[in-house]
Image 1 (tube, rainbow, N blue to C red):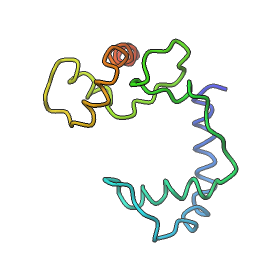
Image 2: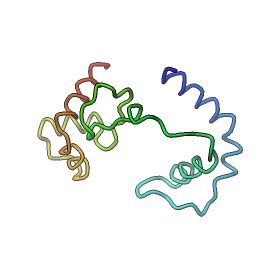
Image 3: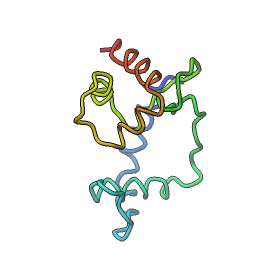
Amino acid sequence: MESRVLLRISRECKCRESKDMRQFIPQDKPCAVGASEPTARSGFSCLDFHKNKWDHLCKYYNWRPYLGWDEQAKIIHFHGPKVENIKKLINGKENVTPILKFLYNKNPDAYKKYYNLAVSFE
């Protein structure tokens, strides 16, 4: 199934279930560091609300550039450095946070390849 079809299905489910899910979100859930409270609580609660109704994707449908270049990767998850950060890192700019530099430096060649692939779609 194509990813755009999955996204449409996901959006439709989210719309149908949003009222029920909002009532399900406990106010005492912890928030992720740096996340807004509603976003963080709804993220945790989404997993709870849909418990036992989902499964993990194959690793190639959630591939991260720091894992290296892989021809089998289907969906690249720019976890950490985003495309605009990668451009700065490739060009040696210093205004990138240390954690983004750390992830980029795990596999700069793969980041460069995935960056070039991403910008080819613009």
